[in-house]
Amino acid sequence: MGDKFCQPGRRYRRPGAGIVRQAQQEAQMSAAEIYFDDVDLGDEVGPVERIVTDDQVIEFTQVWGREEGPTRFTSREKAQSEGLPEAIVPGAMNIAVMSQLITGWSPTVKLKKLDVVFRSPVLHNRPLTLKGMITDKDIVDDDPTIECHNTMHN
Image (cartoon, rainbow, N blue to C red; front, side, top):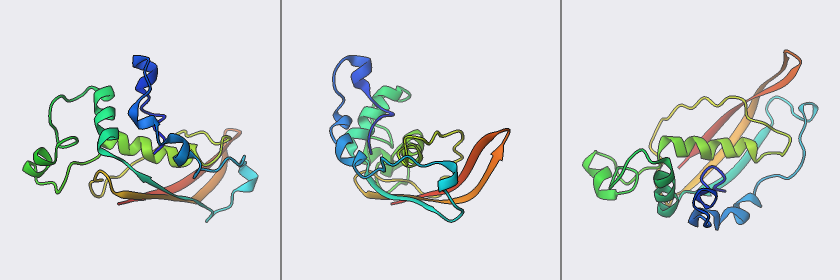
């Protein structure tokens, strides 16, 4: 899951545990420069596979700093006490993972807006498949804009 969104190494002057897998995972992403004229409706982005590990979630929640102690994000028991099957990946972390699908597609792409609808919890240590499909392209205020419908499946 290329943890660029969660790099405590910069904050604490030590490498973050989640960074270790970054090089392998980024190899899955495209290094090709993609431009507006290269993209057509129906083009696909990905698929890309990611696995969000327990350690990555713990590291994310520590940097995030919103909750302390066992939570539905870090503890199976706490998650089950709240009716969940397992500990879940925080929504903010899911959004970060999804944004990497687009930003990792090409170095020429910039993400302007990301709308997210959560339909089911994302569990730790399970393969996630991320993919997208180009649904619209237009030039808005002299700015080439592409809309992409993205999905993430556990």
